[in-house]
Image (cartoon, rainbow, N blue to C red; front, top):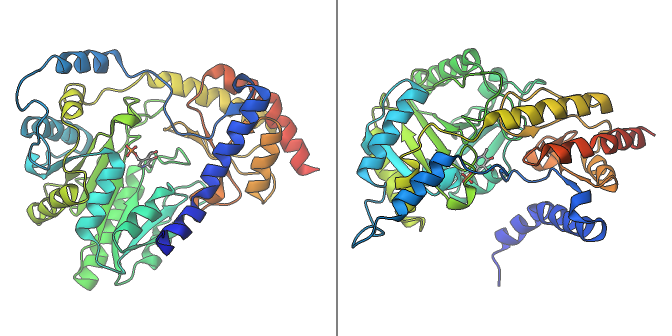
Length: 393
Ligand code: PLP
């Protein structure tokens, strides 16, 4: 009854379900308040007040057409405003006609891959990486090619260079990064841009740079996320409001094409058609209008920063090694034993839920999501220490 590929995907994705079930089991036995659940990247902060106000205001609009279909790429006035914001983030203003409003970053990535991939095309991704990427690329007949990052999770430009071949269609980057919290600096991005430009000269083929950046506004210590449009012309950005406004359930985001890319018109046409025929049709009308009034805003990032600092202390005390996250709400420490799944299950015995790094293509680590109250993080202190002791003995 079910497609063979889906059966194997369900198997591959089942560890997420198993973890979820184990978490639910532990919570039913010990009480939810006694389990420290760091497994989900579901933002817990309330959306900013400005978002609530814009939502209430937009909800007052009534009459014919308010909730109707529009151009598949979204409302014109919304895309004009988004283009202004993209200029602030990426240094150049895209043509609003080359902005496509999407159902989140997930919807955006699927539109991009549908538009550019031929069967057998490869998409290179630095690992560790967001697990859904493999499924999204496969949806459109491509295959994902992970390239290990450096030990500090910075880009391994030589590794990427070696992985490029005549099937390579795109490099997909995500900064700040899920699961590592790492931010790619301008220098490494410039080197990546140069590499892609050299490869184009050598082969006459364009390799796209795709930047998936739903965490752009969740950065700490006044760090800046570099803009990309000045770095390489064949760049497509996709993002969402899921994390910075804490509204992942509303499914709203966008794609923007670099105005320097000569074939932007053709590409945006293909992505817009993809939005329609993938069944999204268009991004939700009400949400398009609401987010266009709060562009560039975010939840109070200092709350995440305080949690990051608290976790830093707890993990150091437990003797775990990690790269300090500069953004997002994730830590990705090394496990004290090689077997990350085993270490995650030892943590479960201490009622601490995390995700093994294997799920992100990077065994020997665990991902900790700190979208939970500081009191829960504080409560995990002794558990982390005990788990490390147990794992070593
Ligand atoms: N990309 C990354 C790196 C993510 O972490 C997520 C969600 O967790 C997404 C894309 C999907 O975002 P959205 O829910 O906005 O589609």
